[in-house]
Length: 371
Image 1 (cartoon, rainbow, N blue to C red):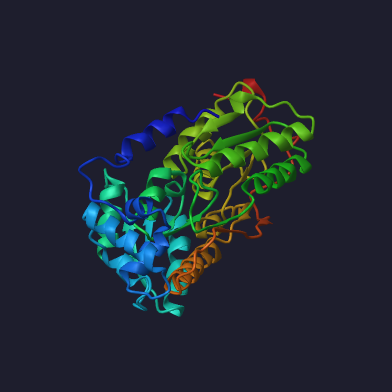
Image 2: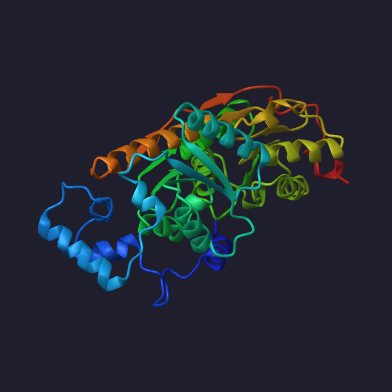
């Protein structure tokens, strides 16, 4: 799968890394003083567990760079209420609903102040992040596609704040990540469809900017190859994780010279769109065509037929992200570094009413029967 278009899009949205006119960050001070950003934070907060020579180096660097500490840096060791920002740039309303509920529930349980911020209309991520940090935000939850953007993570870490990714992001260096095995989950779903007797299986790829899309496509390909089935590139259609893109991709697959008997979409929104497109063509799901999704959002069980899908524990993943930030924040308050933690949660293949074996009586896959 080509990533050229996605990479270019991210590049347009990224702000310049740093320029000579930018305000110095806590990371700049740390580099100048030859210590860690956490040590700089301890000096800023007046902690005593810093060697005198190190403290002098940090203060000298602050003076030289004319660094002005932001509220987040000052509060790291001050015991103030933790403030977390959940940033999102994701078109799936059903996914975001689950994502938000998990964060809200855990933040409420821990008495954490949660800010929910869309980045869709923000041309400069760096400006947004700096504004949030100056407003006291100490931690950030980064769902896809933000966890794939290294510049976002760099901005957060340069400012001395905490970042936790939710999903298999491309960016590295965060304080933690919560994810599932995207490859294996897609492999298992494809193998399940093959087990029903299908050989021509279509696949709708998700947003090419996201690592999750790559891994789900790889899982599909690997399962097909392991079963000794040919992979017809005409049966792989590009989507964007949106309902509309699912409609377009499903139409392309159903218009193929030899259309699939089953379609596996990379999320429930695109799978629901595939069901709608099948119904528009008077095809019965699953008797004429099997349709499966991924995520198990509320949408999966609110359409008919209900979707067979991969249940991704989205609420739990987000709750765990909040927990990771809280732990890292507490360690920072005690002057301790927080090593990045990766937590992989279990997924589940949920079978409902949208899958069945290929129908011998169906004339759908005979080329002469298509309009």
